[in-house]
Length: 206
Image (cartoon, rainbow, N blue to C red; front, top):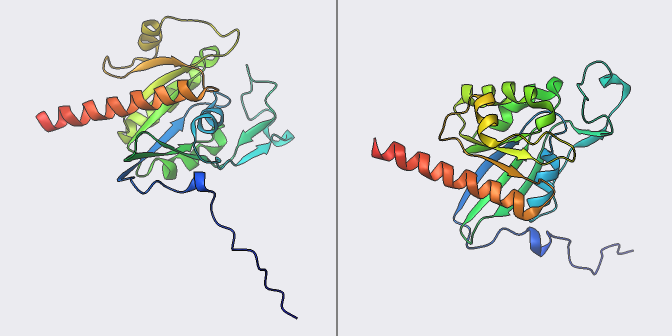
């Protein structure tokens, strides 16, 4: 009996195929503390179906994970999120969202490998968790921009006050975003690309 199917073999969706015009690919990591919106941003902006490793939070995290301000959150990223966005016909960004819970931060080292830049997502209700995040990027020499994710009821601080609180250099961009919106998340990535370009131009001029 012949069990072979007459249907053509399944392949990637047309929307998932990398454009033939793509000439350069850049790895970008989206980092931040637990519940700041990393998975949301990758999912909102990705032109392909994002790969996520979200799992339901269990009692194992009670007393270990800091859930203040996100008590209603029931899932968490345990490895990474992955997405892709074409900035133009030639430039493609591969997005890697890091796990936010500190017990999974040991995975960050591998995700940082080969990354050209990073987006630090910020929740003004829990500003203190961003210090370690920014410190790790600075230690590894990964350029980054800071995106303040808009949460309902979150304190609305002037950006320059946040810059001072985070001790950010004047050149590091900081902007407000809504990680749920594709256009807002794309603007954050474009800001990162412009910053990386200016950094490269400065180094070439030295």
